[in-house]
Length: 167
Image (cartoon, rainbow, N blue to C red):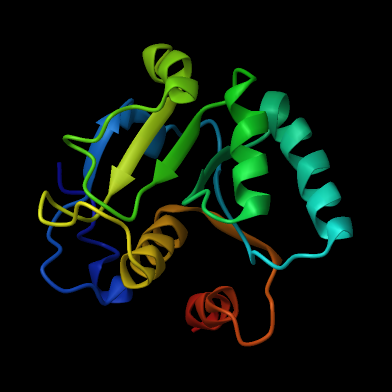
């Protein structure tokens, strides 16, 4: 399924014509809810992580559809909270997803059609790298209506991402 035509120039990705999806593709075009992309540096202070957890608890029942790579500690906590509620969630992967095993904690949301896996990478990318992680984050931001950067450590890849998004 090709959904990148309008955002491909922004992404700057090479050899990417499609976004591969697994799960409920309707989440990308669900018009009744916004899609919010969430990012947080790994070295976020505890106060930021607590605020992010409070936001996730609210989003779990009343929020937008959240999209992220869910890679950093703060992002993983958001995902953990969201998976225990009825809220739809989109996980953007930094590797191929077609042959990937669904994690046990993802099975119920996946079966309930409230989880979507998205990846701009084909079967040749079997393991995430720093480069594919950054590209994944660009895709997650491009697919969202709004972006929240909970914390950006100076000099981090999250700061680089924030500057790229602001362009």
